[in-house]
Image (cartoon, rainbow, N blue to C red; front, side, top):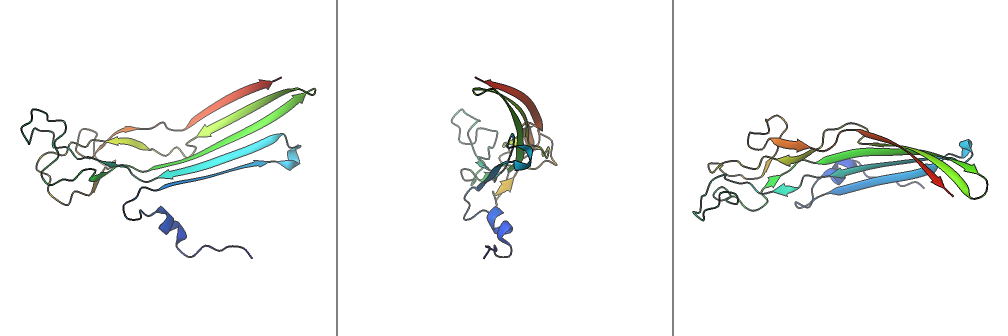
Amino acid sequence: MLFKPPLGWADTLAMKIDGLLQNVCAEFSVFCPLLKNTRRIHAGSRYNSGHPFNLLAGSDINGDGHFTNDRPPGAGRNSGIGPNYVSFDMRLSKSFRFGENTALQFTAEGFNITNRTNYATVNNIVGATLVPPFNVQGTASLSPSQPLGFTSALAKREIQLGARLTF
């Protein structure tokens, strides 16, 4: 009998449980027997929920001479939620044997094949006048200079080719 997951299992998997970060990773690797076991396919997918970050006032609220660490009044530590991360990677390889101890392997790898924009950081300076609730998230609809706008992104799709000689 095959296992049948309950209805809505994917939604439950992606949800945050009691504010905990989620990290889901799935990978598989297979040989292609129809191609004389000389080709291998490897694929992987990864999801990370958004990481928390501190909201900053951008001014010296408590008078300690430092404006880089003051939060808006009433804002708790890590009360902002950063962007999530999703990636799908794939590798194809083919080996050629020359004699008993020598092999040449060609590899093609693709990272973030779906070319999804994965944002890295958020402009966390929101000003001293931000009022509760402080559970805020960054957004791509704002410019990087605006509060809660994304300020940088991780690499887009990358493809690399390689060769390996084993002797």
